[in-house]
Image 1 (spheres, rainbow, N blue to C red):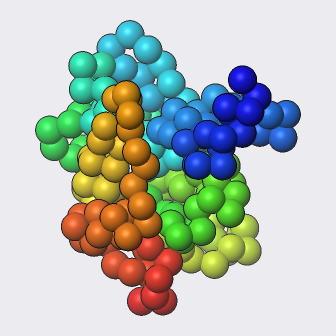
Image 2 (cartoon, rainbow, N blue to C red):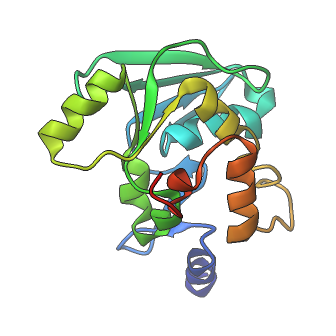
Length: 186
């Protein structure tokens, strides 16, 4: 079993902790990283903003789902009704600290830093206080579109993870630039 877990981890189907236990099986997380997602009869930790908005698409029979988090800058609570039909309303923004191309350098750190803020002002405050450089910022509607098809087929037998070129094509199809992917600076 250990060998199988290591193989799945090496293929980026799982993220394993230092203890060898499963930490993440995207979009599911076994550790709290800032989001909770409540379906019809199940509560999950959302690994990040992206994964939390993906769960209603992957499990539509559980929807609509309640996605909840707090703003990292001001600690204001936020919750949205998210389903697979239309983006949630709200003026909040998602900040992706790490470019997607570098996600797997430390996937738990990356996911822990894909957060939703009240506004661009809260992003700026958090960046100033944390000393981090600004990453990509998405509105909720773009985040929802990004999440909509990312895990299509993930729960089906024989699922094959997207190759990097197909992933880049998908990101472009939802209107995200090369800067989000980490291929360009603008």
